[in-house]
Length: 235
Image (cartoon, rainbow, N blue to C red; front, side, top):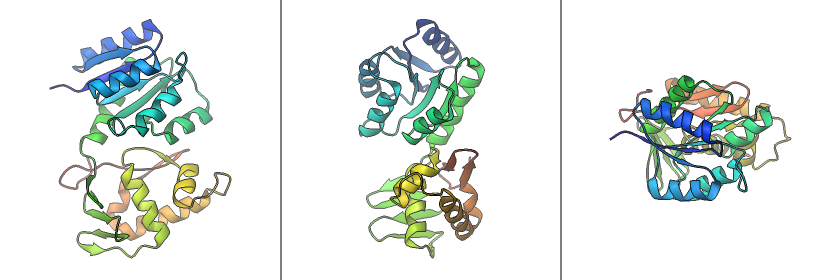
């Protein structure tokens, strides 16, 4: 069965263009033009990815994204923002709210199709959560015991390094901006120097050894923990 994609845009020409190229690539496509309609479709149809415009009438794309992430039935759906907004602040806000990718208009339908495939690959084999235990490849995180192991060996992590690793793995495949990590891990305001994040990520990578490469630097934004396949290998 092919993957299902929900396209949310109030411009009929854009919606038709995106739907055509995705259907041509073999995806099952449905559409919505407004925020409430999109949320209902996402809950009813459970799409694999939502392609979401930010400038929707009434309920903005930001509000739709926040609501998708807040609802248990849609919190793990892939989201690609497709918008005419090109400012860095818009990108950062969208990625911080949990978008998986951000593409500006005018856009190449071929590039959009490739990005859909890339997001699907990242989400295809997510880390596995069982109760208080979270697993990503050889890394196992015990939330209750506040400990992490790799290949059965306990990692010597500080409390901050543990919380940083937990945050990245919980949101694997999604970009975490430096300000967002400061707020989540350090419970600090975004105006505190983001160099703190970089230094801790560097130390965490060192302690993870070869697995440190799973923490990817997204230039100009922050970091992303790469999804792994079921054998623990990088895709």
